[in-house]
Image (tube, rainbow, N blue to C red; front, side, top):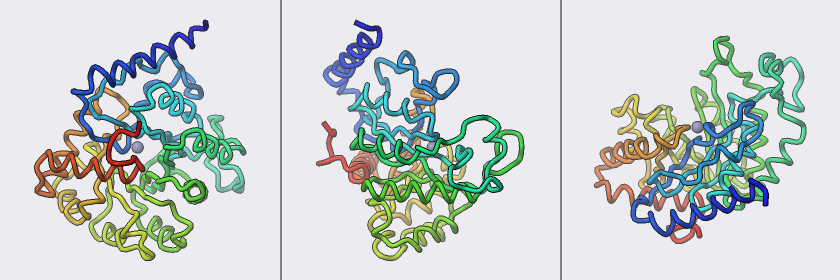
Length: 319
Ligand SMILES: [Zn+2]
């Protein structure tokens, strides 16, 4: 028996123990967007290390949607879900901060710094993304998006927007082809995102679209919710985190009030398991206060919204 096999058995055992013995501690709430696998990557960040995957997922939040952000972290997200299938919903995508050198685009539109780091996206990335979606039938596509504000490290250089748009559109197409929801990062690009979503036929858009840690204005929000063809009315979900939305609770309370009750989600967006529950409690409270719901009412409604968004049947555990 190999060390990995032993580890696999321990993982299975611990999941069973978790379900059997600690379920009274689980709070039925879904973290719609987090990155806790970031702390489990091996040193070169290109391969997962099974030894870094914890035996127990010690958070009270019942399920976590784990966002891949680079081509190189997809194996870790996949391994984490395989070891803890009841606790994670995997998401595979390329974040706009990791567009690197993009196959199929002219050299003069590429990011020279990313290229120098040797973290190019290989030509096979689309078929590999599709393979991960096939392997994980409950996976969504994320974290994908557009960002005109962030800069690369200390360079003050923004991430090349042509590459961002190119990769974003390709990933929207793959999500649509596999009928999977998407989780979208959008910073200072609400106009560009609206243009894409408005100008794409609804049949060529994913079934559900999460605007994660929504940071735009209330006017842009209303524009998203009124995208024609039923897209705004039926497919847009809006998610809130402590990290982004906790910076201006007054502004975001007004925005939360403007969102239909059945379209609000909450998330931690953190990369450490230790922070998940506290950040989820903050978001839950922000939504409850904004909507004038009790915490219990908020938990029930947001959990139902999450189950609908992620396609989890009958509002309960997927298994
Ligand atoms: Zn994120």
